[in-house]
Length: 226
Ligand SMILES: *Cc1c(COP(=O)(O)O)cnc(C)c1O
Image (cartoon, rainbow, N blue to C red):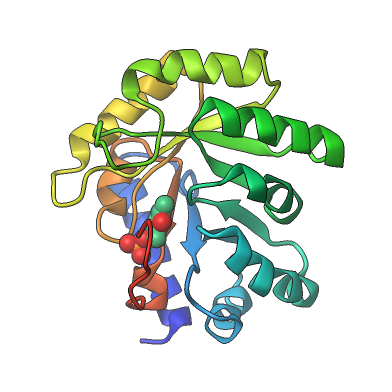
């Protein structure tokens, strides 16, 4: 299967999952996760009309995307991986949405960079939905208050929540919980679901799904956060 075929297949599965869930056609955005794949692998997916992409490392995105953007223009690039404060300036200039805001310090540093650059990006707050000690994300119990502080104290444009459920568990209850938390925060957007579980996520109200390997094929193993 080529990457363009992978994209077509994922688009069809998203449309089918929308129908099954009784949701409007086109209500779920596909974020194509291109981490570890080079420009030659990404180009066919751009040629097939995909415009929303996710990357999990600032440096890797900086190496790949400025040239690809010159070729196609209107790409929307999402940061979906952990962000260190020393990379915040690059992240703000390179990305269009930051989905991985998960602690006070990064909220403050991002807000400062956005003011400095005059680029006020929408952000998502990442929730550690399985309360796993090793995993990124704000604790469930702190989510509502953290979202409030991101908005009121830091002036961030929080538009949704993002999560990665624990691996090898039924993800449905975690997706349901993210939906409840988003409701509690008064947020519309829920970024949840990956190659193995995006149909389930759509059934539980995902407004965007982050799909990598089902489009691009199996990734070489990454050292961290994969
Ligand atoms: C890699 C990654 C994905 C995509 O994973 P696949 O299983 O390849 O679809 C989605 N979200 C995040 C945060 C990721 O790091």
